[in-house]
Length: 198
Image (cartoon, rainbow, N blue to C red; front, side, top):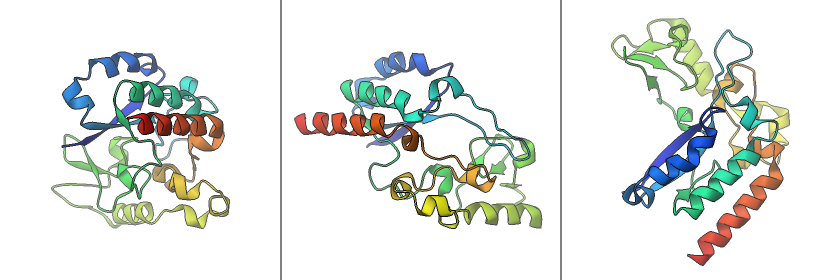
């Protein structure tokens, strides 16, 4: 059975990824799809959010992702950057009725923050207040089609509108591909060659 594995990248762990890939046993390696993501936090009421990957992510975010995808592919992993396969959403938090649940049963809309102030309810108590229900409704109805810049962008079908949490907080974060398209295209071409040779 194939599983999907998201590897979160920060400035602190970026250099350890090659070792991590080597440590994954073959039985997992050949039955797993890897996705790399930069870690950052958009927290309600705070501007800006915490950026855990500012140095490595830089102004051209895909530039430092492409080598990791290439390395993973060369080690026998199947990779899946955000545009591959039948992905209808940008991330796992985009699905309706998808919640992140902490150890207390608190419900959150996104993995970027588990700050108690951002809880929209609890598995035992439901949403609790009309305010929380309104916040959830706004979150699930947030989309890129109300943004004229996104509607005119050629990457919109590919990027799926980017991070919903950032957009919900009026801090739109465009896909890293937009700022490092050349690295993205080279990585995709190399992946096609590797896939064709197998």
